[in-house]
Image 1 (tube, rainbow, N blue to C red):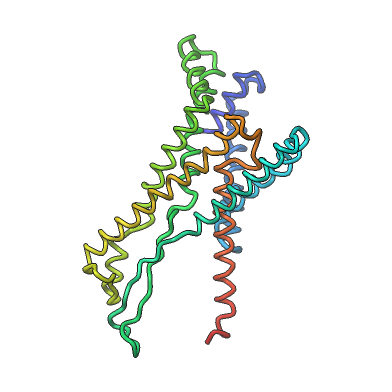
Image 2: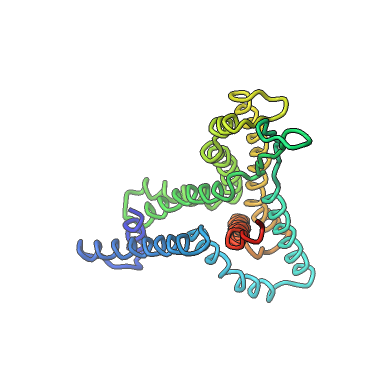
Length: 296
């Protein structure tokens, strides 16, 4: 469907001529096959590499544009603007890494594993950004869909009313205030939605109860599940606000004239940092597993 919309948009702007049904089928199949090949390459990286192949491809696509961005902006900036440019970029990267790595450790005790000094203690790590960068990716994907529809309506030779609606959609999507507010709200909403999918507190509480573990002061079972849900949602509220703020902050700086450009967009920064940290964790776990004998 997306390949057909792309063709219709290109034809409406006069960039592609009218194709026969067979040529249109070949073009749609070619565009679809290109996307499937990239998905296949991502799966190969996941199977034979360190996982997250598709995320790595997205990250590489983002990183490939950084040298050109730096070169273009440094040629037109004065020394003060260059200082702001570097300072804001470093500050955003450091803040993203710190917040992404932040976690709350909920202490638990195992009544069945007794040491000489009493029951054995452990903890449940709950990250501040439990859902990672997926809310950002979901929000940007959903936000790009109206833009695609608007371009499609404008490119086609429809009635004046339909073309007018297409122009209104594009005008609204290009409005920076509407863009920043919409992305902010979508990221917060998807953060809570994704948390309910990936963090099943009922199952976690049940597993803790089977293992003879409990949170001090909290009864096993439903009370434990409710406590973990409350803690995770409180952390998710802070993490979601941070993700949303980092996503729109570079655009706000540019629109207000505080800086002329950033090395990377807020959403791109979150994706790159998240993927790099995930890659680091997987490599460390592989190193421990492969050399596990020396820890015995």
